[in-house]
Image 1 (tube, rainbow, N blue to C red):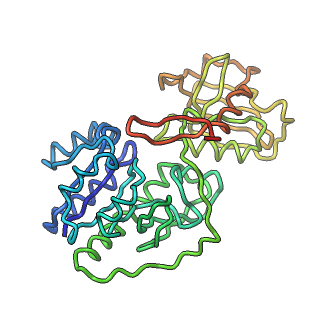
Image 2: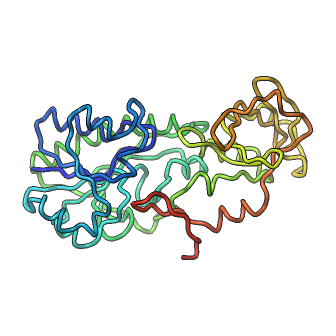
Image 3: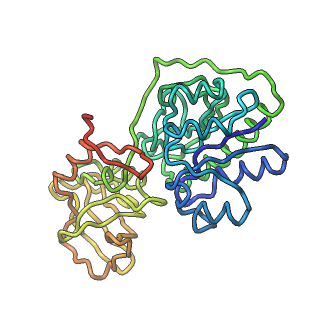
Length: 340
């Protein structure tokens, strides 16, 4: 049995690829890693990037520009009878001939319950929606996004005030267990049993790009603003807004007084400032912000901010966030009109 691993890690993480590869090496199971330039040079937690991790651990890999176009190259690597494929954050949607090449033994690791948490950017969408549960799912790949039969799915809970970092820590614990289970199932050559999926409950959400979609609408309720900030917090650059005509990123937010109410016109006004934080009026309370960064991700000194001034987002940025769609390509994230 040979497992083809296609893709790489999430940003600023070593997982799930590191754990999977180490587990395969421990069991002395053959694997082939296929990655792309985006994943190869993506920042990791304990390494400069994925390339450094692979080189230090003497792990061979194949660099593809587009796996669908480079079909002949892939075909030369595959033993059709004994090969499986597992996609880990793959930037490619596999065409039918690749699915046929692996004789339908082709799977995807998805963070989210299926079918009602389909699509990329799942963690951010789930925080926005205040979902109580998510899951790590391994499902069969077909020619539709996150639509194949479920092989393994394990739930984990999402706390009400969870951050993205905490979400991914919870997901990673489940990921490690589910990947070991998957390796056991395919290495023992047991007949794979799939779960039934009720497609009537299907919900798909599109990919998010922080710099395009992460703009705060200060007319929202306090809880919606807070959840929005959490959804674009670490490991990303943070939700965006403006201060004195300058783009700033907002992180580390907390509502400190839900009993205080403000008119929507007051929302965004800085009502209190110290060296460590600022307090901002919102419709249903006071929002405490402990970190603002500029476009170069440098922290803004709070003592330079004056009370009575305002955080605001021009309407054109809010409209653009709804009109634009983020697409993953071999050259990175491409932003296009949502109508296309």
